[in-house]
Image 1 (cartoon, rainbow, N blue to C red):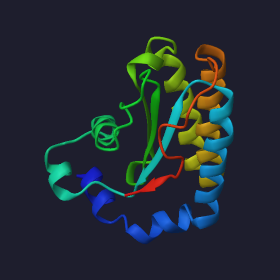
Image 2 (tube, one colour; image 1 turned 30 degrees about the horizontal axis):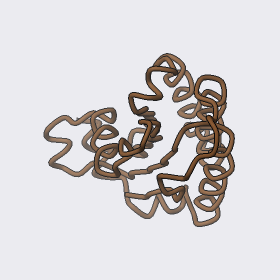
Image 3 (tube, rainbow, N blue to C red; image 1 turned 60 degrees about the horizontal axis):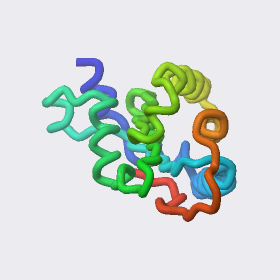
Length: 163
């Protein structure tokens, strides 16, 4: 019941307050800069709350992240190197979904550790810092486990998505 209430009482304008245009620009710029240093493609998505139908179906934040991963075609890269950083504000949930090319190189436990650090930042009200931490943390893991292999193109948009 608490979950349903937190989603239904989560107004969309709160997402814009926590992620204003300046923060979205910082996120986009950080994605573009860090992608030059590793072999991954990052997408950053914030959703303020799930709709009643999703709540009724007991959709988890992880399941929703997997849906968004497919809808935004993060999986559709030449070497399966897409990564989705998904934030569900109503739950302060953070999920990182890595495509199979990345998942073979970076253990899930490392993504989970990064997600927890970002959650702590959000819980402290530091949304800009948490968002940039998620991107820079992912970039650090990718530099170590999935380095750049020659020239590469930018296959996915760098702009964050607000749902």
